[in-house]
Length: 185
Image (cartoon, rainbow, N blue to C red; front, side, top):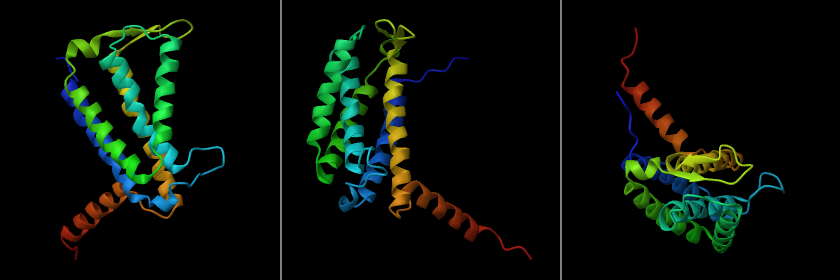
């Protein structure tokens, strides 16, 4: 029995990840968007802008350009575009708008991918190892990247005295389960 993770599955999963990232962005007050854990780390705003912008290069590589080989020059061009776009996201409303709109656009792109497209390979120049990966693996990296940064932001929330929404939801479920449990004599 085989297992197939489709574009529709990918889209649904990414939408969940992005919904949670948007909630974190909403829960942190804009007055705290300049907060940095240490001077050499990204601020809250810079991290969220970075997350918002990152799906653009994946969408471009795998959808718009649909490259089957990505050299260092291509990667540099994509990163330059992403960095410039992220730098333009300077306020909480702009960041939230980008997270919502760019996330929806990326999810729609994922939704339309066929099994054959997800199985296509993209090659890389030496010394990159392995020298090729499937689009599925590369696109999975976009979701993993966002989850990595969201975890960082959830620690930042704790440092700012904010209980992350996923923790609040879990606590509410546990409180509800405790209240519904029969009392022991």
